[in-house]
Length: 379
Image (cartoon, rainbow, N blue to C red):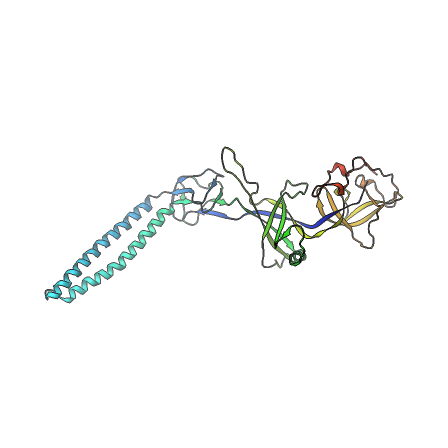
């Protein structure tokens, strides 16, 4: 058995979310050919510009050499046409040549100008294809495993070779319903801000699947609110930006904590701190779809009271009566062990493990009582 405790606590909403990388890039080849080299180890951390693959460059080298030869040929023809034009201009001045022959060489020079521009463009294109034979990482991040090995035929823009994802930072996406969104927006528009909202920035606390005590050890700022609600679910997407530092040094590696696709718990601040009733979480029982507490009055008679449960604070949980006209009494005590033995309106012999109980309002701020401290003997 245990008595109600009160504590100043802000109001939060707990929702689930997912961790996503900022950038996820599928690596594809921009030229067709046979894979000749793989430069990375599966799962390696890479930097932007690091080589990942090489497509056999020999066909591209041959085409580039051919286009360079075409350019040199056209440059020679251009030099010859310029010499002939200069010669015939002098001969025409002396009356030793016709204007038609001069016009013919001028036309050849103009034709050569166009052909030379086309040949140079083809040379640049072939140079690009040669450069594309070396496939590099477009971002900093971690590369997945390679899907193809040396000798495989790679099709241009179709074959996915591997995937690179960015590591630091990462995003945590979560959805909130329309009433919650309105509360958040009204709170942000108000002059008095709750904990977690400063200078127009909304901060959220994040916990992973191992955060069984709901400690929410990671904090980040919300940097994105979608511009419209999903009409089917009446929810809107929000996003937090989490730092995810890592060190790929093989001697003292420090792997990143967050990975894309991870489950996350998100705690979103909604209101100002206020006095709230708290009970140990084991005291909450269920009656079909309702949450109830077993109460022991001053005459040691047990009865049920339907409650609305709120946020968790460690192993504690906030409660309030569903019927505001029937508040909890100061002498009411809560059954936390042996709930299955309780019968409505029946007397009990309650026992308090007073030496082991740690009152919540005596704990330092932000600290919760241990589970054993909130478990007295059976009533």
